[in-house]
Length: 161
Picture 1 (cartoon, rainbow, N blue to C red):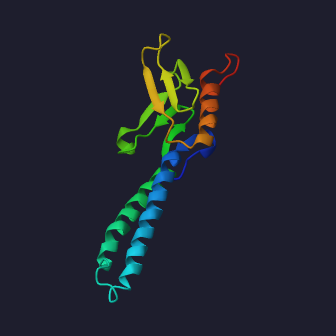
Picture 2 (cartoon, rainbow, N blue to C red):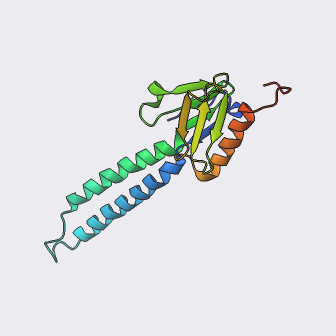
């Protein structure tokens, strides 16, 4: 369960909800398969070739696993824009391998035309930096992310943070 936010008004959270839709669909299909196998078990006395009800445990277990993964993808952050910088959380072991890219490290940022790749450059020559896939984020949220990063990275010099 994610921890409560200390100051939610100062950060933008982007989850992997774009990836979660496929897992929700898979969980629903697997749950339907389990129910179908159980329903067929009611007629085993008529047709003994029908599968045993124990076979419903496999799709049910897979449905629970994919449902748990979908819930995790929906609730937990992938990118968080904070006053300090951009926090990037990987898919596996996010607490251990989380990376913070501070705003001072980012010299330039670019997002491709399809809004699927965010590139954060650490130097003016664009020889070092970080590529982040935006595919896990829902399509309607990618434009918001692009605007937020652009406003923060390319803010006018007269404006203070």
